[in-house]
Length: 142
Image 1 (cartoon, one colour):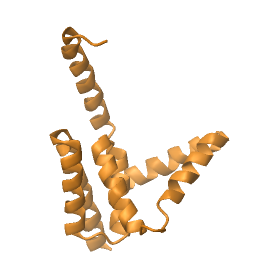
Image 2: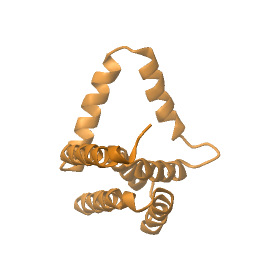
Image 3: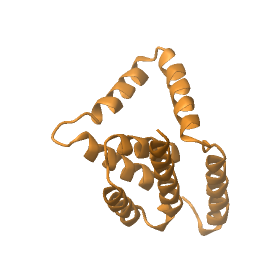
Image 4: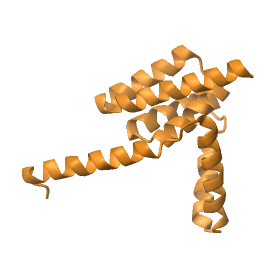
């Protein structure tokens, strides 16, 4: 059981983990995509059947069904913000853009994430908006 004396130590550990996670943030969307592809190839090359099945399940979960892929990506974005996973946020921002999510849909989804996750999600919402701007900038260039 955690006592009140453990709280400062646990908070410090949490902050150190948060800072470490921020340090591994990828500088550009291209860096992120390359890193993700390279590491996914390594993971899948391990031959572990359970990992391969999970990756397949994850991919198939976002295929259109009763919900559109666009709606599912917005759900993925909300969950990623609430779970405070910046790599997941980046991935779902990219996918939301690819699925044609409008700016108003994007910000409405972020509002849901904020309500569900609370103020601790604000740094991740900032990063999501930054990644959205990067995607929009790349579209202008192309």
